[in-house]
Length: 138
Length: 182
Image 1 (tube, each protein chain N blue to C red):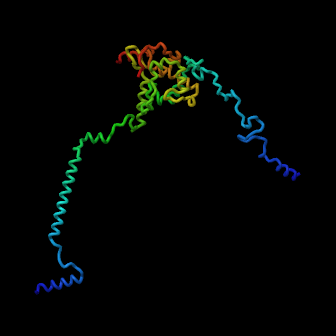
Image 2: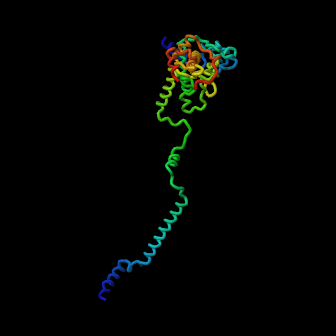
Image 3: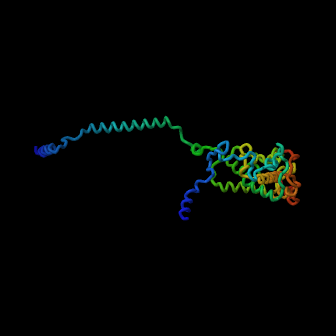
């Protein structure tokens, strides 16, 4: 009785304030925890099965590169236009300033344009009508 | 006298002059227009173009085979300059039809000047193409004067010679070097 007295006093106090008089039942908590655990496990299995169903296999580095850089037709973007033009000019300059074979077997050559201009100034315009047959230089 | 001057200066305003304004109708001419049409056959100064050979590259519809202007070293120099400005972007400075425009993707690129068809074409043909355009090439009549067009044609022929000529045109020293080279 002596032990119940303070409890009774406490209960009255709690009732006055509006507190609950008993704890939540342990079976409800454990039931909720169990349901949660099953739900987590169930979701994990669903995700796993879905992943297995749609997964196509590991991607190789080759596939990754092909996907990243599709093959565009030429001409590509000019990274350095100045350099491209300089290269072309250098090639053309080489052809226009040097002697070289065009067709060695038939004795056809190219000569520097300056030399050709001298020749044309002396002889007049060439007439290619009876020219040797064959393809062009390029 | 002062009064007379003041009054008379007001009487004839300078804005009221006996002249026509732009497109003002006229009762004087039968067609009612004050702006008169140019008499037929009128040619602007310097635009007569009576030399058919020089202005069209043709005589009686036939392409000319000789230059209508004197061939000089100066003409060739001028032709080279004009060619490298107007033609080389597509045709290439060597005339191989691989200019920077073609290399950058122009699909209807020009042929090489060094193919037989163009080597054997008369000079009037090239003048005609520059004047009237051909295929994917626009005409350059507005950009290049007739004299400059002939200069370009003369240079073009020189270019054709330089890219394909006989071994006899090579100086002896260079010829020896070429012979050893394979």
